[in-house]
Structures are given as structure tokens and as C-alpha cells.
Length: 296
Length: 296
Image 1 (tube, rainbow over the protein chains, first blue to last red):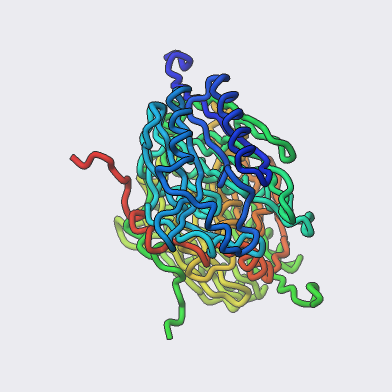
Image 2: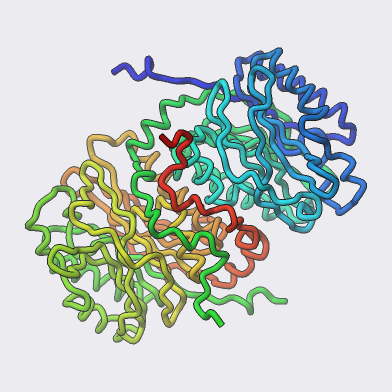
């Protein structure tokens, strides 16, 4: 069997940007990035988390709820036209207004014909000094799922989700070939010593999702300084074996275009058949917060 | 607060050995290794999977069931005496005969007074060319658990378990400070090209268990050539941040003695509070083998 003839290549685009205060400029340079990636043959293109604005969760400010928009709405409308024009799938991370009082951190998947293929609402919401997301985002109710598109079965998870093996597993079990992680992760400028450790852990756990599940992982992070937060970029793609296929700068905006051979999924899962051997009869307690030894 | 005064050090010993055909010699050199580690102050000492014998699962041979022994039995009796003499906790991976027709791949935890603190029976059983474990080992029925000992709360998992984030998570949720992985992993000698990739994936996914759960991970692998399998050693300890604290040779037997500062667990889980944010309301499907899109 000639392995070359059995390749099933999907070309992925990652748009790693720095965001300034002007949303219009952010949108324009994102569109430019999408056109560049599509020009290089990218078929599924993923943007970073909350790509239209600076990372506003660094303070708790009611005024920021004005940034939220409905889906469908202005962003999905204009991006649908772009997706259809270029014939690409787009993954759009937005601040969604679902109703007065209910706002989500959401990723919309636009199919290559411009239709909305599906949406995922961030399930795990962080809250740390400088990352006050629990103030803004109602935890998602979409669950973990796969969104079929013209170019592949897309799982989308968002940023903080990346630390939860459960999220990766459930998305893979629903059929995803890719785990996309639009992200806004950085370190506080006063705490540079931990930055390399954190970036390393961030990469390691996502590579492990690839390994455990036999899927491609695509992390798209923002980059650059915004007030006290230094977003570390380093967007990357790992293959089902957990190997890094390509990795972006930790300092500069960058467009990555990466070929993923989907036939590797079958091959890897046959070689290391983890999904065959899961002990689903013994996993019930995963729905508990903690398994207390003294239940008093 | 002086962080030095708040350290809570537990010293761990890892006995990475090569095994020859003579079980008596294997036992003697293991005892020597234990004495050496204890002499260097190790308090919890972990042996490699099936430490008394060569890795017999490379063929399916009924004669090998003779190697199984009861627990308590000869191995636990002699190791209990050693644990009590040295005042150390021992993790003993054995081929357990539970009854005629029921054999397990089991790890016994012997406490520092020589008593048996608990046992874990390998839950995930592999079966690959050269690793015919499903022939020998009934899948465990202990579930995933923590065994309290004089020197720390010990989680034990065995080899193939290391590829399953569910096992690590459930063990950590039951209170474990350490995930010990006695292991026998290697590559087929005719397939050396994949060896570095496999060893890398093996390390990555276990470091990710440390990160996801904020625990120490201790992997103890055998080393050296046995017929067609080349066991790659590389035993290591990673801290709750996923950083490698120490790592053994990929070629030679080696005793590692490593200090683990348990106060890091609290610190790491406060800094990155993943356990706070698990979506236990949305994890039910983890008890399914696959989430079929077409249920026909």
C-alpha cells in the first residue's frame, strides 16, 4: 500500500493577532489574515478568542456588555459572506448576547457556503485576577459536540476548556477530527518568571488531548501586551501522536497554514487503541466534584 | 511568609531494573535497589510492573499462569518484612492469583509498618502484538482509589492506565497526592523509528495528568532488551505543574531518589483552579464508549 496515495489532507489556517482598542481595525486585519490564509489554500480557518476586541475581562465593567452581539448578527453576517466568497470554513469566537442578562463566550462555525454550521458556548469559565470571566459569561449549555463541515468534523472548545481532559474526550467521542481551541492566555507582566512554565504546561496538556484521543489539536492564541497582560501567542497544531506540526511566534502576529493528514487518525487509533479499552463501567464518579473520604 | 518553612517534603524512590530469567536474582537485585533508595532517605519506594519476572505477556502461554501468586503470599510476606525493617512504604506490582481462572495485574501498597495498606488491580488491559495482556489479566474491579500511608496519600495505576485521563482524574479526586505508574513499556526492536515518538507521547500524557490534577506523577518503567521488546526505561517524576523533577536512563538500570514538596499541590491548585470549574453536570457521556451520530 502506497501511503502517499492514502493521505487525506485538510489544510488548516490559524490567525494569531494582536488586538488594539479599535474594533474596526481588528476586524479589518483579521479579514486580511483570513484572505492570506485562504490564499495559501487553508480550508478551515480559526480565529483567536474574542477576536474583535481587546481582552476586556481584565476588569469587571458593566459597560463592556455593549460589546456583546446577537448570533446571527453583524459579525456572523459579514463573516458568512467572506466564508462563502473564499469557500472556507471559519471558526469565529464572539461575545454572544443571547438575551438581556445572558451573555456567552461563544464560537460560531461558518461552513464554506456561508451558512452557520453550529455554535459552541464555552463550558468552563475561568476567574482569576485579571481574567474576570465569571462576571461576563454564563457557563455554556451546548455541551461538548462535533460540528460537521465541508472540510472535516470540527470540535470547538475555548481557552479555559483546554485544561479539562473531560472536554477533549467528550468532543472526540462525538466524532471530532480536530479540537480547535480559540484562546486568550497570557501572563501578568509583574510575574514573568512563571511565564515559560505556564506556556509549557499549556502546550503539554493540549498535546496530551491529541494523544489520548487520536485527534488533531489546533490552539489559536492572541499575542502581545494589553495593559498588564502579556498574551504569549505560540499558536500551534499537534497531530494525533501529540507531535507539534507547526508553532507560531510568542511575540508577533502570525498566520500559520498547516496540512493535517486525516488518515493519521485511523492509523494512530489502530496502533494505540485507547478508545477500545476505556472502562466506561467505572467512570461514573467523573460526574462528582470530589470523592470525599469522610462524608459527614 | 517564608516559603521554605512551609515545605512538606516526601522523598520518593524509583527502582528501574532490567529483568533476567531467574526470578530469585530479580528479587535480590530489587531488594538491593530498595535498600539503596531507603539508604538515601526514600520514604515511598515504587517498583516496576511485574518486577519479579521478565515480561511474560509477549506470548500467550498457559504455563505462565504458574508465575501468579496469592496476596498475601510469598512476595508480600517478604516485602512486608523489608518495609517494616526499613520503615518505608513499598509499591509492589505483582501477578496476582485471586482464584483458579481469575488472575490480575495488581499493585500492593505495603505501609511502613509492614502491613498491607491496600491493593489496586489494573483496570485498563492492553492487547497489542507482543503485549498479550488480555490473555492473562482479568480487568480489575477495584476502581480508582487512594491508599493512605504513613508518608502520603498514594494513588496507584499500572502501565496502560497511563493513557486514560479518566483514571488519573478519578484517582486524584479520591484524594491522591501522587499517581504512581509501575510500567513495562517498550518498542518492538524491528520498529525503532517510532521509539522516540512513543516515549515522548508517554511522557507528555503523564505530565498532563500532573497538570490537569495538580498532583505528582511517578512513572517507573523497566529497562533493557527482552527478546523482541526493548523497554525504554526513562522513569521520571513530574511535579503538579507538569515539570520533570528527575528522569532515569533509557538504557540502564537506575535508582532515582526525588524530593516532592507536597505544599506545591495546594499552591498549584490555588493558582490554576481547574478542580473548582469542572462541569460535572455535563460529563455523563463519559460513561459511553462513543457518542454515535446515527443511532441505527
